Amino acid sequence: MKVNIQIFGTKKSADTRKAERFFKERGIKFQFVDLKEKGLSKGEFNSVKQAVGGIDKLIDENAKDKDTLALIKYIADEDKEEKLLENQQLLVQPIVRNGKQATVGYQPDVWKGWD
Image 1 (cartoon, helix red, strand yellow):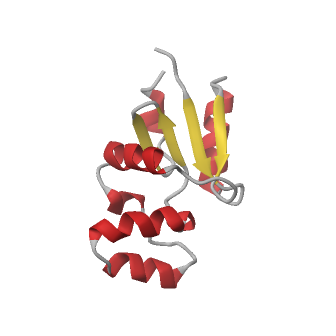
Image 2 (image 1 turned 45 degrees about the vertical axis):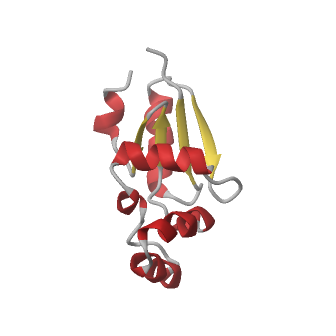
């Protein structure tokens, strides 16, 4: 099976750095996508959302942007997606994708099963 790992996160995120180290230590190539420079596309976002079991799993409850976080919690589900796409600083980091599979947060136990 070919692993095609993408790590979406920011350099400031400790969990993102830990994820990068996890794959580096195993000699697994990955592509790092800085959410500050280039966020998830709508297609990637939907793929990740499906893989992790819904939009609420993607929202970082501890995000610094409390105002937008509060807004996202109380708007209709169909509007949440658009708001999250516009405000990707609210996503749990890292988002790690391997084709159709994806995880949010630091999930080494899941990643071990990917190779």
